[in-house]
Image (cartoon, rainbow, N blue to C red; front, side):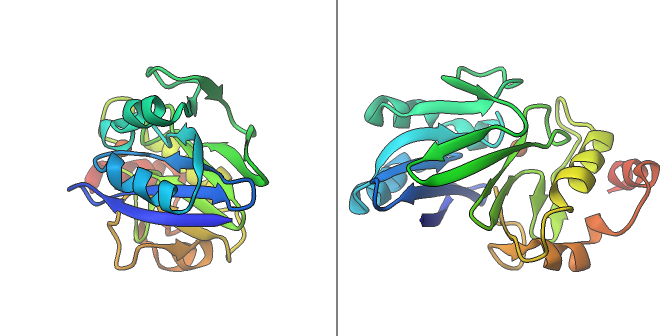
Length: 204
Ligand SMILES: [Fe+2]
């Protein structure tokens, strides 16, 4: 598997290029800000982009979608609740195959209703649900702290400790982490009841 974490833009976003080197196909996750940089990586690796996958519909994660789709013919994949144009609507538990590389979709609402995390070969792309040392904000349109609590406790934290965490922004003291490290060190993930978490999010 080819897995490239690519810093883009001025909001410390991460896009990802994930591909199968044998089948020479790739998905670009959350393309934004620096489409040429992302396409150049794919070109240099001789990968045809077949999917654009968005962790969620916020502008800073999708604004390169159309340019990449137009240039490569890639299909745009988002959660079925996303209000944006998409070619393929996915839901919790779905899989996306990129050659032999298999993405599993985890629906993780909370930051926004259409948020998904993507589990791929021992790694989880957490978008704006979980960052290194932080969690996503819930004070934007469609945000819901109770939903984020449920997503973190029932979808993200049950993953094995050694699963690597690749977030949608470079907000931590390192660009990636592991579930075990975040479970033990991320102050937003300290054991709390749902009510305590909702209060915590309202106060921070
Ligand atoms: Fe976001």
